[in-house]
Image (cartoon, one colour):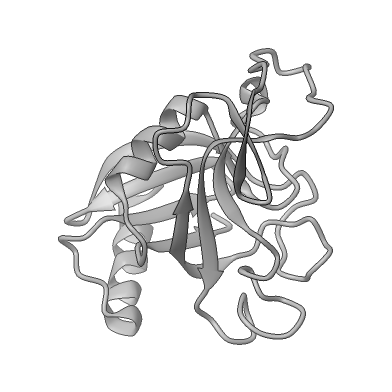
Length: 183
């Protein structure tokens, strides 16, 4: 991501959302299929991710990844085993087979290992009737289709490798800002 865009995004968050540079911040680039973990205006870590195969959009039922500023409102899966399958944000006690090839597909599109539940902060963009990211159950989560990371493949959420989502989970807290952008 070009440094001027990076700086502009951080400045906007400081001006409109009381973001403090000393706190972690997440920027998700759909174009780059990359999640950036930022602190003090520097990328601490980048992760390969997958956004929605249906593209970008905020409409309920669209299976698209919503754009805009969000925050993490609840985290699930603390201490769950890698590959643990979640249904309704509950650990089922089952472990998914992690698929590593780009042509492999899971039968269940499992949510695995950790969940960071997002809530939109922008009325009319990702918050409100018919477009609410929280009511759409938009998460950052682990996937059993790790081989598909780096390309759009989800049903709206942000997918990550299981080890990566554990690392991210441990570095952020509820209230962390997440800006999902097209670039």
